[in-house]
Image (cartoon, rainbow, N blue to C red; front, side):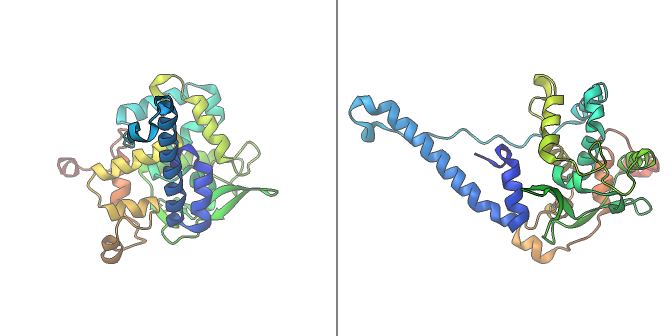
Length: 277
């Protein structure tokens, strides 16, 4: 069992108790998995009359490295969604763009209201996530952690997308990515929509978290430090030393600049000297 296999449960643990609280459930899940492998091996060798002596430790498969969308895959993914009427109706193309532009979690993306977008400054405030409360329904819940609350500069193409949406929206005081009635959208149902839209084998591995991994990869390859990437993603501790000696809660222009080329579109105001650098 890993984080990606039960995202809703782990997300609730994180936002109720802070990111560090997820370590214990992960350790418990890993131990259960290890015991299951060991028990399976004993059952297979039981008929040999010497199960204890003959059982060898079973090595768990190597954990797959996080995979991100390449530039070509990002473009193909958006083209595929734009050509799918159901995906367009479910607002998946722009939601995918927003998550690639910011690296936010799906619950955080769905919790952004228009009041959180500052078009003049070119920023978006990420202070909430959407969760479902039994007997209440969907609510916008504070991230509760200082690191989780952050203001992000947007690449120009993402800002243009938001301006287009703001002009066309029927719910200017509601979520940027609302449900059909203008209210909060369910993250679990939206994940299902993404799974239904990803088609065949080419994108069968894509989940909502892949957009976060994609943004992280772009920032890492651009040369940003682990601390700067952590600030963008709302992570509390890349390391104790970085927490102690590097600044926090900064709005970093370099992150937005790095994500500017996420869809292969350079900044319109980029000079020839910038391109050489």
